[in-house]
Length: 316
Ligand code: ADP
Image 1 (spheres, rainbow, N blue to C red):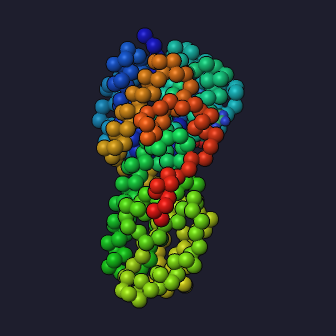
Image 2 (tube, rainbow, N blue to C red; image 1 turned 180 degrees about the vertical axis):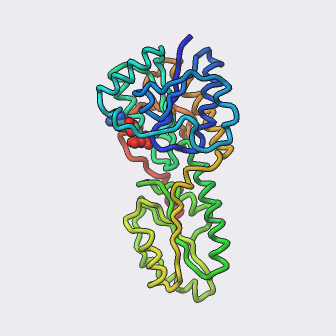
Image 3 (cartoon, rainbow, N blue to C red; image 1 turned 135 degrees about the horizontal axis):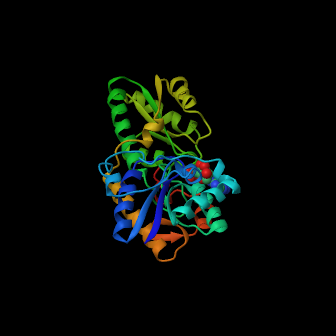
């Protein structure tokens, strides 16, 4: 019987728990012995690795986060610690890994594979949706739904009280969350790193709209733009002439119970990852594209910055 382990690395996302559940079920179905590695690559080094069964994943499908923890590991960047990780895996007879994470995590495991031959398959998991080569990363849909609920709530208070609300979303240098939230929440302004803007272009229109009776504005601002959200709020107050407030959504975007879509994608990503490893695809990332699921090389996924979909970009 072959042994296989799963790890969550880097930022956690909602959808990791359904992935863990299906990892255990699908591994057993395929005649593999499943293991969990706790707390990211730290767990590989500290031998925090445990064989698991169905019992370990009961009652977790509806929970956000990850029951095995996730971490960033500085030690894994050093060859001597990767040797310890390899020795730990050898002792347990594990030579296949599934990793849920971002491009940094994939780069790390690729180095490990080159050095020690431990096969792995990456599953894109980040709410930022900034991984090149995949249209979708686990956790994005849940994050978008959390943002939607938050903006809907903000709209209730904004419409009762004449104000501009500047809502800051996560995403690092990628404006995907802000862009999709803008399009699906009907906000008045969307600022993202991928699109140059000049606030002057909105001045006349927004002032006219106030004269015409507009009572409130909602602006969705990605954390990666050059200006601070407070500066955008100040612009609303000083230039447009409406009291304003900033709401930084922050880490609530990473939590919440996984949506149906994330549960389903978790199942599909995991099955594809295990299938790939069983079919001798030794070092890859399962990507979801317009053509369906594809295995891509680490270099393809990590060498370029993801571009936003032009079809969406032209809409703002
Ligand atoms: P993400 O996977 O979300 O992009 P990070 O970039 O923080 O997150 O990477 C997660 C972990 O992957 C790091 O803490 C480190 O342990 C490992 N890693 C990243 N880059 C390397 C590298 N060049 N060599 C070895 N390990 C790495």
